[in-house]
Amino acid sequence: MNDTSAPLAEIRNLRVSFPGHSGYVPAVRGVSMRIGREKLGIVGESGSGKSVTGRALMRLLPPQAKVEADALTFNGIDVANASEKTMRSLRGNGIGLILQDPKFSLNPVMTVGAQIAEAWGAHRKGVSSREARDAAIDLLEQVRIRDPKRVANSYAHEVSGGMGQRAMIAMMLAPDPDLLIADEPTSALDASVQAEILRLIDELVSARGMGLMLISHDLPLVSRFCDRVAVMYSGQVMEELDAKDLLHAQHAYTRGLLGCLPRLHEPRARLPVMKRDPEWLK
Image: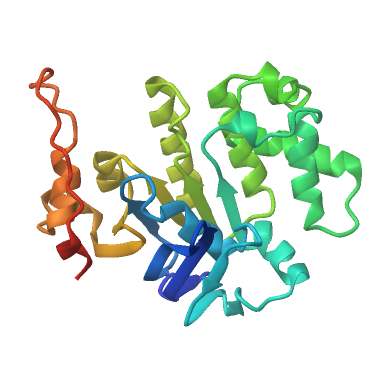
């Protein structure tokens, strides 16, 4: 039985920088967080370091990135110093990643079923191609695809955005990871499909006892969907709080984000401009 109290991942004082014209430019500056078998939301404006933090945990940043941390561990594995062989096993078996747009995540020259079968078989020894294909079809059924055999035989350009994202979820679930990182998983989808995909992720994460890191710009969605929320600005965590308290947060930056939400009852109102306030970083 999974220990739901123990953290899956620990990030302590993570610093990430990228080369610029006059030296390295910091993108993440001292981020610390612990992630368990729960739904953790990470919110903040574009460029605040949300995605970089998630990719640092999977060691998927470009080689020119400078990554430093007092601790960067997953299930006891020192991610910062692990071998590439260990990391290949961890990516999939330990952590799955769902990106924004399935059109850019799915291989255009392989059928959807072949890609899922490959992901399923890559972490299991001695399985036949028939077993892998049957498992792929079963996974497509699990993500509520009505005609899984047809979709398994289709290519990425032959399926809708929502169906492609369901296929990506199936692929990430194939190795049965402990933690799923979902980076804006519904931003490329129609509004009518977004709720279905999030409901599906919620059901699968709960049924499998996984942890979830949901990276999003949508504060109301995160407040309803997640257990805890980390609010990021300029590469730092401004505050961490229970998701149910997010819409009533008192931190100045979080209040500023909430103030930028469009209001249906004021369709012509101008959105406020958030000023870059150095006080937020103190």
